[in-house]
Length: 53
Image (cartoon, rainbow, N blue to C red; front, side, top):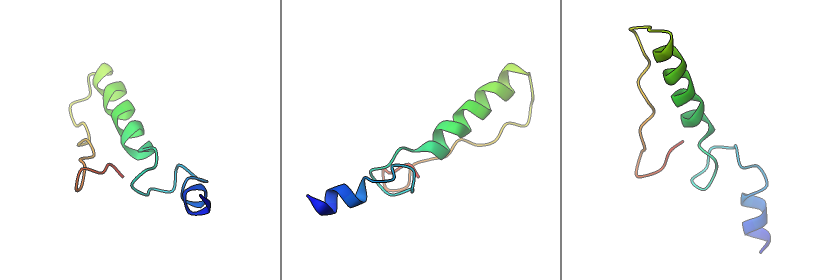
């Protein structure tokens, strides 16, 4: 139980079971820039080994 607790203390560290905050913010950026009709949109972050970092 201690190991599980220690690994989930900070859900934004970037490990496999954490919240993919970078991917979420990138999608928000892409959506907002698309609404502003910008043409050079950043590429979305893709999963590596089925894990979003």
